[in-house]
Image (cartoon, rainbow, N blue to C red; front, side, top):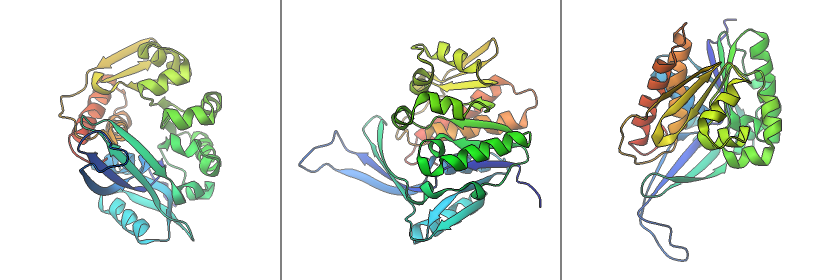
Length: 291
């Protein structure tokens, strides 16, 4: 059997994006534009990789419902090879994203069938595994995530991981996450996650600290761009100009853009990789939805 070149592991969900017309009005009404899109951090990365020309397989779980069927079909239409298991009696995941004027968002997650992920659901890649941090932050799928990471490293693959979100990361435990991901080649936190993981207030110092644990650490800085740290090298690139509509999925888009270059470039040029990630993130924040 031919192994897939690149495997992404994570959540697949329906994103319900609520663009608020103003600050929330408890006990009253507030006009909003509401749209549904395909989402889930892992699935977002896979779709953007496929659109960047990287052959990619996505491994995850959906419920036995119409939402799951539609989301898997959407993955395939985007060029992703789905490796999905349908979980009987479970609902497909749903994420509600409340977006305030200016693009800042709050997310409400019902992960549904994503929590049923098993080690057997994840094929071993030939070259690279990207593991969404959400997989490691819940008791159900954590064992599958750890098994996938171990299998990929045993096969000689590179591995990238993102910490997912500061709230669940803090609740799960920083020390445990650092131990779980010690074998990763590349880590991709945002600035807040990097501070939480290292205790360093300065993102550059946090990036350098993470680069002592991993071959490469890339820290996203929102409107200030991103940092690349590897050994004694630290590279900063500014964000690309964009009129921000919705920041949902910007980090996932950045990850995919960066990985598409990092996997294709044997020299792993940090400037080219950062620029590719920042370009894809800028395109995503300019419109509603993560893709």
